[in-house]
Image (tube, rainbow, N blue to C red; front, top):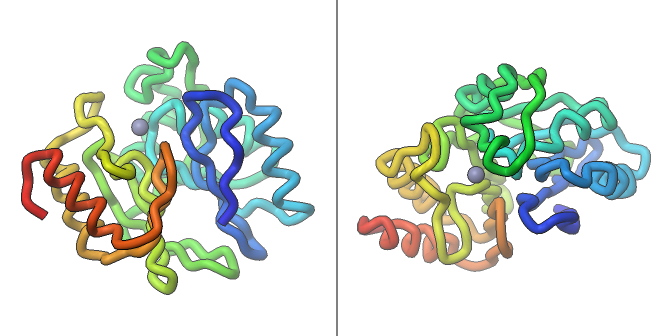
Amino acid sequence: MKQLEPVILFDANMFIVEGDRPILVDCGTGFKVDKNIAAILDILDGRKLQAIVLTHRHFDHVGGAAAISQATGATLYAGEEDAVPLRAGDSKSTLGTDFGGSIPPMDVKGLKDGDVLDTGSHTLEVIATPGHTIGSISLYERATKTIICGDTLFVNGVGRYDVPTSSREDLVESLRRLHALQAEHMYPGHGPAFHGKVSEQTSIGLMMLGERP
Ligand SMILES: [Zn+2]
């Protein structure tokens, strides 16, 4: 997995999952999208980007999606309930307005729990992890016990649950679900990756929410 260098401070982490049919996870704000596109094309080195998976609707993850999709020809995907506001170009519930940007209506296909994406080298299972937003998803590779978890879980923290469509109760359930996976590698939407017992991180997250793991 290759992580792109952040171009601006608020950009979410962007990952390329390698293979013959590579997949990009998240797109940043798009405020300096030309730099992102150049970095992506460099990593692709002539391969076609199969898909762009958006972990959730927020502007710091999706602002660059339309431009990156156009430049690479890749199909956009998001959890179905977060695909809806992206199709509608809803700049409010995606926090576009708060970031000083806007969301154009995008052609986004919906993903649901249990869907599988295959890059040729990596098999990623979609896990619905609502809480931070109603349509938040994580991607799990069973073979390597790797989780890409968007803003559901960070190293020593959890995503906000005071934004439109978020739910503390859903976040607790989603953290329990990630906890049960016993993952060993974690790539969150912001901040550093974590290698070790990811259940330690889900435990910290649950305790921050006043819950027992
Ligand atoms: Zn977010």
